[in-house]
Image (cartoon, one colour):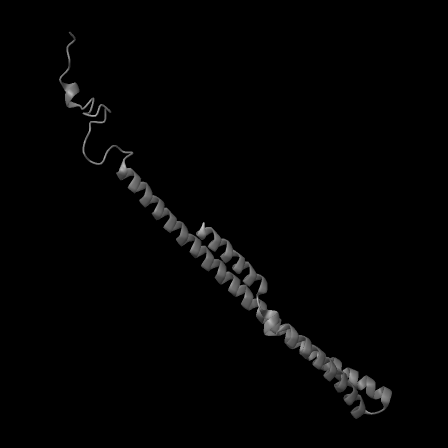
Length: 158
């Protein structure tokens, strides 16, 4: 017979289940339910942090886009002001030029006013057509959502 060291038994060299882990009743080894809960908690915490950072990025990007949009609108307003001033000056020059040709300032002004009135009516009719509710209706989006709903409802029935 070989001699055994009694300290081997005290160290828990082999647990009652034969695994060698000492067999305590604290929920198993490191790979047990406690570790699984910790992994799930870590995953949820990291997902929350990621979502928070993504939302912060979204807010920063949205704020930058809004600043750019406001700057673009301001430039568009300035361009419109200069455009209107240019149209007024060109119209006045056109009246003067036609007045030289027909010999009357009043007749020249009436001719230019008539032409600009016709142009204004044409552009207003085109704008009314393009801005009508039937042309602004998001048909493709509505059809796509309806198709998605049909696909989803068919999957739920199966």
